[in-house]
Length: 117
Image (cartoon, rainbow, N blue to C red; front, side, top):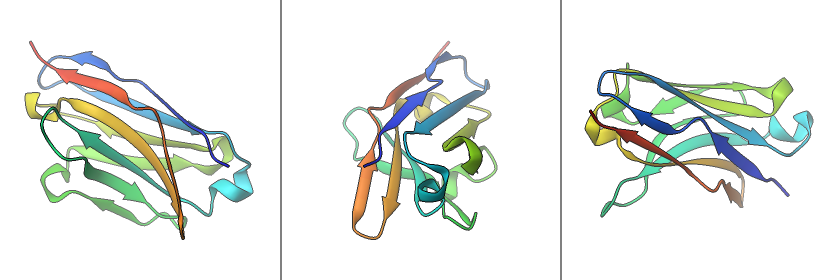
């Protein structure tokens, strides 16, 4: 069983930066086996992939976000991060952390990111 808790969301001005964290309540050996991801869902929109990172460190990003967002993980801390730079109003959404391994999928409760002046 994996429990995910996101933090770091909030209000930021356009052009600003924010770093999201997702802490997983699992041992480090188990954590390493999971592909960790960040998804977001804006009002009236479907949930979409922002980025993910595999157990071996391979990263994948939504094309439109490459160069602005960076996903990373610290297996010793059972934590995955999302560094968001040059934020735009269209980045406003609820951001969700995900852990996936074979047929198992876990979701965090989400953290709100609002980009506005």
